[in-house]
Length: 383
Ligand code: MAN
Image 1 (cartoon, rainbow, N blue to C red):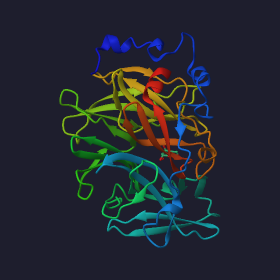
Image 2 (image 1 turned 120 degrees about the vertical axis):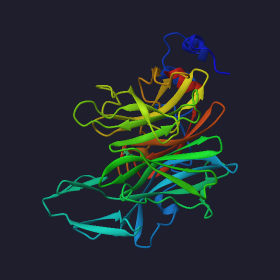
Image 3 (image 1 turned 135 degrees about the vertical axis):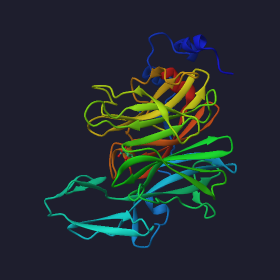
Image 4 (image 1 turned 180 degrees about the vertical axis):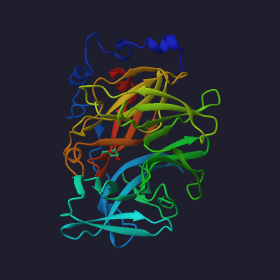
């Protein structure tokens, strides 16, 4: 049963068995060494649990460059991941070939010469040519399922999700899956030359999907819909970006029908000099706890080091932030989190819960898919 606001605010360090003045890191050290890592995550010993070689490319002349950032959900008594599969065509020395989806659904390949002074290749994820940005890979979403939450396999009856139409011509990425009643709502990054926005599709059976178009126009991403309405109103976290004044901050929006969003409020900004100084963005749907909505978010600094932290939002008034991690709850410290396509990244947009246990699925170094367990109680105690 959710407690009253006063009681919720009153959750003290003692509630969690922490002595006064004891820090989270001391608490970890004082317990049996559960994890050699300097954070709260208990990484799967099997990590990485999925690598690009584990699944087949969507077309014979493409190769999977990165398998990353899975959405997660439960369906049909199994745990499912909606993998982001980032592919690229076979490359030729001295050139870069980038893929885009045409409006008729086919794929077109654009070729750029590395000697061309108009080509900027400084970021491995996005190349800029003559003022236009192109992704070096194109992503679609592939479902895989598991009985134990560790070993995943493809199940052909459930189709992959592919970018369609003018706002998804550079692919779809980083899907959050929120279940409301029997329906699953998929919010994902829709990328095209028009910009980066948030697309919405819904399904009940994972075989038939309804497309609801773009719910947040560019530039926006990292959208997670709350899994319950509050007084009949839907809520979503999202991340618009403001290039000159402002920045990459987490916002909250409301909707009567999941399609029309308004009453936007800024919840969490970047913090100067801290691990989340350059950008912050929501992970998967917030988790209802007795103390508030617990949101696992990512934060990056100017060196593009991506860590995870937590926000606690008021249960009835989720625009009120009750607490926020000072230090990350997870940092890129394992070898597979430090080195890869884009190193020093832990990025999560999918989790499942079972009582106090939060199983978080994440992309490491934008290359492979991993899992880690957390105690929700321990995350709350750290705030
Ligand atoms: C952005 C997104 C993610 C990616 C991170 C780290 O936030 O494009 O998909 O994982 O950057 O590169």
